[in-house]
Length: 168
Image (cartoon, rainbow, N blue to C red; front, top):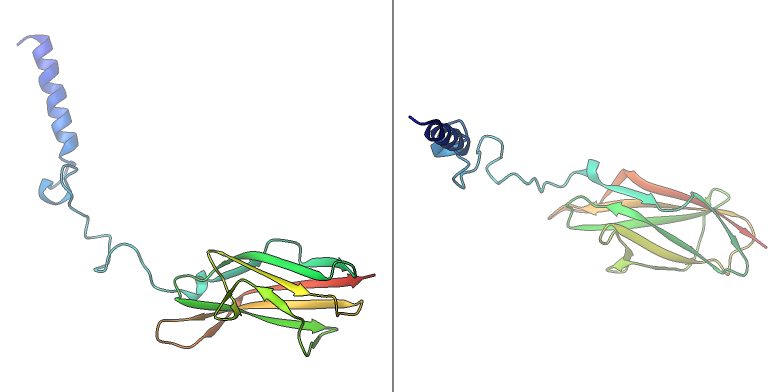
């Protein structure tokens, strides 16, 4: 045999071996659309199970804000993730000197069914501070999620706390 013919034969054999996937060609061949059934559950490889440990909520800015009387509002935005729960909302609690504020300040928000919610990985609300006295305040946000055919549950690890101080 000529050297060129031997080189072609060896190259072709190696290429065929590579395409066969070095295994049982009927199940794991790179030449077929067969899927490796050993690594995936029966429903598929993507796990859409809602997990409370995946839920998160955080602010984009510092946890202390200073607002002046002339500003009249506090804008709060952040990032969130509600796992694969079909519904969620963010409950807000407003405090002055550690006590709940009644009535709470007026809030405009990204809302679903009238509640502050995580939408596309973000949340945003504006709080009217024009009627507040010069003092220190706190707002706490906590994520609630609703499993399919269930009731809303508080996810205690998914929360933020923002202190704001109204100055002259």
